[in-house]
Image 1 (cartoon, rainbow, N blue to C red):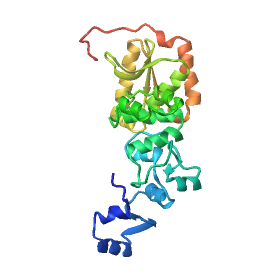
Image 2: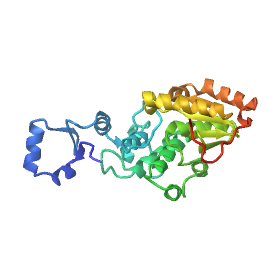
Image 3: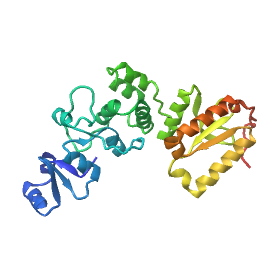
Image 4: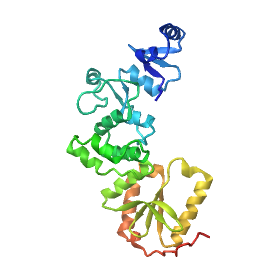
Length: 277
């Protein structure tokens, strides 16, 4: 990953020292702290982390690796043991801090820090995303934390890489907390694949912040909902905002639907080969 922030040794491998000195003199390269320099195009959060005396890690680094990370205002920074003692709010991994090889930690180092820093739900969310993206396998993940504390191993038992977005993982975990079993990624004839199916008939669909805003997606979603109703299903569609910020209101409503038996309706199973008209 090219972050635009480099150690001096990395720069000398790329260009002659005389060119680097000229770049510093004309402002193309900016000194952040001893031994670290940035291009003008470098990302602000990476520059801030290095200027503060550390590097970008944990959830902030995972996001730069393409992992779905729950929204948060905090910038996650870590440093060597001495720097971490000066900044007690920085992220840490178990044991000694690893050397700072680049301005943004690699995936495994960031994940180790996230295992201590993030809440259990948020850590499951990022692990689900790591598996779904193919960045690691379940076996890789288990091996990486095999010697971790029992608390962490219990958290990892809740990881399921089938979720296609972090908000799907949030819904799954929160329904589990209410002792509601929701089967993910179920294919229903004439309806298609749904995010969750509870019992025989309660469908939970989770609309992402971007894809479902398009006109075509909106129309397709409503047609699927209508077809599901016609077959006897009860589709419930949740927005990103409802899952992330309004679950205290949304969750009890789903629990009430289950209490009333909306998840155990009789549904029509269409004959094989039937198509949507």
